[in-house]
Length: 211
Image (cartoon, rainbow, N blue to C red):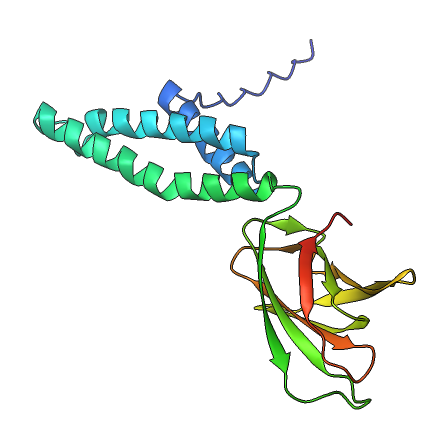
């Protein structure tokens, strides 16, 4: 009778321990969250989980296991306070960025431009700042006599803006930024407005408007 080939012995798979499984899942999840930034509610849940985990770790770690109980408590709370002190300001900043006011409050000042432009039009330089993130920033200004928008700058940053006017109201000027898509608190807009003739102008009102 022909001899039958004996089956090859199968290599036994190594089984992870419970602690190994938790460690590997935590490592993979940590790498994933670095690649894909989670939304803010998930960040809060993860921060709570990390704080609880670090507090337990401070009690059961082989480094701290022999410490007095009060020392382990103190170290655990110190780590939790440190983690919250780093994370919470970032959470607040993200919340403000994700929930901006539709129309921010603005502060503006004027400065007369001493030299007229090449066509002899005197002008005024506006400086505008916002108290919250302003998405698709758009501003209007009203002069005491006919005027037009001449130029804009953004400090700090690079910007590009479209200039607008109204045929039925020559004292009205407007700008809408196409770049950047939002203005942050701490930045300010420099806006040059010129008189439509050779007479000096004054700015009566400046307002943020919905694009």
